[in-house]
Amino acid sequence: MMEIKPHRVLYSSAKLFLQFKHTVGTCRRGSKLFSPLTLAASLQTSAFVRKARFSQFHQYSHCASQSKRNLSTKLPISRPGQILTCKAAVAWKAGEPLKIERVQVAPPQANEVRIKIAYTSLCRTDLVFWQAKGQTPIFPRIFGHEAAGVVESVGGGVTDLKPGDHVLPVFTGECGECRHCKSEESNMCDLLRINTDRGVMLSDGKSRFSIGGEPIYHFLGTSSFSQYTVAHVGSVAKINPAAPLNKVCILSCGVSTGMGAALNVAKPKKGSTVAVFGLGGVGLAAAEGARIAGASRIIGIDFNPGKYEKAKEFGVTEYINPRDHRKPVQQVIAEMTDGGVDYSIECTGNINAMIQAFEACHDGWGVAVLVGVPSSDAVFSTNPVNFLSEKTLKGTFFGNYKPRTDLPGLVDKYMNKEINLDKFITDEIPLSEINKAFDYMLEKKGLRCIINMED
Image 1 (cartoon, rainbow, N blue to C red):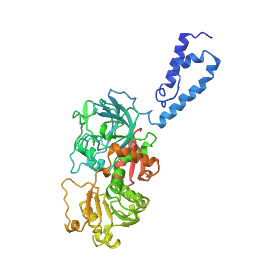
Image 2 (cartoon, rainbow, N blue to C red):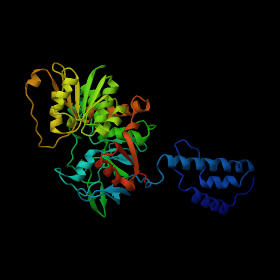
Image 3 (cartoon, rainbow, N blue to C red):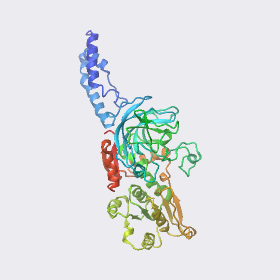
Image 4 (cartoon, one colour):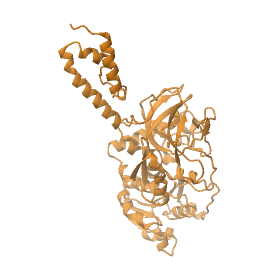
């Protein structure tokens, strides 16, 4: 056998290491790759092994392309237990455009996970609290709560998630121990219930984000407008790793809320009539849920007639613009449906729409479900006879889905083509253009705008 000279091995190893350093370690699990040192030695030992050089180089190249497809090459290298620096869209003041900043993200503490966000989406709740008109102004802050990503590292006590798991961070949670979590009827976790005014982590009251040592506040425990974020383990749902993250990310808020309001709360029967108030993303998800349930008529109510054409894709069969009628819209609906709809779902948060949705239900069996979130001091009134005539009024939070228990199943339904998420997505932009998503929403253009955090 040919003698291998150490200095040649080291020289070759160095060259190969420099050539492939960006791909080593990013290959999919199970790939059998030579290290640079082994390659260098092999190339000088026998003709047989030299023939393997092209094959091994091809494997390196394959892993490099696989790495790009898995969105792992541009984000910072994982450093479990250490502070990471990454890009984030920071809101410094209410209503001002977000700025892309370099932020430091601290490692997860007990019962926390640090997540590499792959894709996120803008939800109206982000916009409302960014505007801070009537809400507590907490700034600087990192918004975002509809997202999907991959676990980068976990803190102490985390046993059911590990680095590499594909997940959906959620604005609410499921601790699994409180009365609500143990109840089959509720998803209102005592520990992790939504709190829009909390800008820090539960465990120590501190933020995991900072710039130059100064804290940047969290939003809804998710803050997905950062390439890396830290969340409580109870607010993270593990999902099928084969699911496309740029699609299923929208399940972590709006789509699940609307669809669940129909399927889990209203529960329309096959052949029933359903009215949906508000044809935004949540309203269309409610219509989709009614369509899946088998409703024969789905009446969409919205002030924007331009939404009707798109709404047809989600099962809406008829459209009402309240401005086109002198009568109250609930009376218009009653005349269209011989006394009222079987089910109505309100998705605007407008007090008048809530009253209309309830009063538009048929007496004896009609069910109205309130989904939209009104202002904290809002109050509405209706004649008590509406209740005495056996109409039912319900409310819902996150479509009555338990995040960790139920979201994986919704993802599987998408993978099995039982639900269609693609039609909700109308735009996709890079992180650097995130302010366009706010513009689209303010201008009422499109439904969901996906933000690629790879940038």
